[in-house]
Image (tube, rainbow, N blue to C red; front, side, top):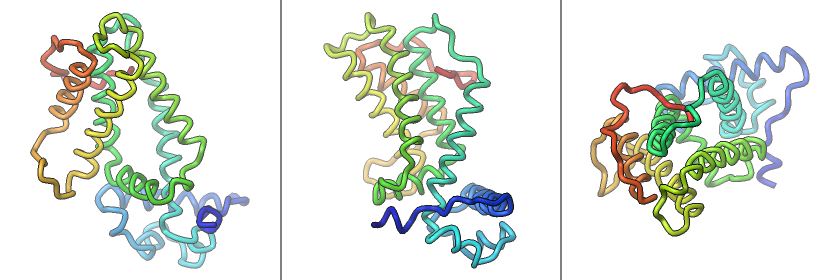
Length: 226
């Protein structure tokens, strides 16, 4: 019942689609500097040049904006990724790991508050995330696992498949907690720059796989694309 009550009303007319896009643009811009819970419907309406009535005609609650906005961001991310040169097929295991770590850090920094809002909302209302979005994320992670498993002969863990899957989970979760939920009080919190976070995340994954790190990190700051 909750999912039915909170579904976005699909726009049928061009004018309605334009209104939806303006509201999503407003939320995207506000999330660059504010937490989702700090943003009011009044701010969204004023910034998008719409009315409170048109807002609630499409969105039962402010929270129902999140899946639509994240889906749009995900589409933009896929387009930008498709334009980028892939990591060479002959890239080493360490290069692939460091490329994944830097990409995760870069993307989470770009949309920190959006990722935070979606993560919190999805834990309470997992039915709200579109199946297509989840499937695309699974496909991306499957590609990452495949790239790492090309080097299974270098992985000393007794179960390479599980090691790669769990290792990626640990690294991505640690990066998300450090960047997206950095303001949450935690006894083990400590300062770490984004570059250093990507480097240490890669080192941790390599160590878990049983691979010795040979590089000093991605010193030029460029993002590799696995």
